[in-house]
Amino acid sequence: MPKGEIIPFPEVRRVPLTAVLERYGLLADLKRVGISLVGCCPIHKGSNRKQFVVDPTRSMWKCFSPHHDAGGGVLEFVAEYENVTTREAARLVAQWFAIAPIEHRTERRRKMAGERPSHKAFVVEDRGEGEDQGFWTKIGSAWPHKDGKGLNIVLAALPANGRIVLREYTDEDQAEDEKKSAANKGKRK
Image 1 (cartoon, helix red, strand yellow):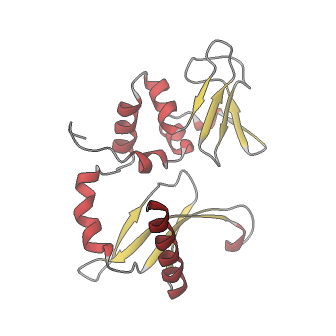
Image 2 (cartoon, helix red, strand yellow; image 1 turned 60 degrees about the horizontal axis):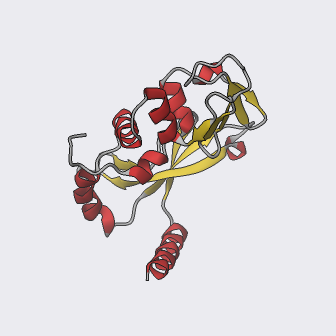
Image 3 (cartoon, one colour; image 1 turned 90 degrees about the horizontal axis):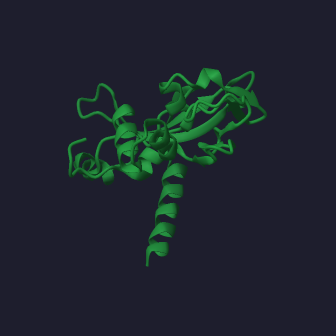
């Protein structure tokens, strides 16, 4: 990202911490304990296998070492691991996960803003037998490509694991989105 471009911090913060840990090759070193992932702290290279705890559902981490005692989200982890500022950490995460700077995205958003998406994009993490047993998280939307041969997919987050599923955007989805938009406009006043 060239200097002067605006880093989309809200989108960067939505990158799952597990995706960052996987990028560093650290995810395999952590053990699942309940809903948490636990292991040695990769930041200060600790040896206690229970001092580094990750909550993948909230994308948060904490090191319980008396010598380190730190924690936070994706940006705080990358900043600590790389020994850089939070801004530089955000720039790295945006680069790794192909999150465009705000100035590059505004033109595309204007073109699609008035159009209803044709699909919703979900990441599905399988939890058992059958498609309905998985954990579904909406991560974006899709619009028909101008040549009519595909879809433009806009993702707010990238999956760490699971599969991406596209579902048709229905009239009920449109009504729900309009209701949320009206509620957000009321909050801004």
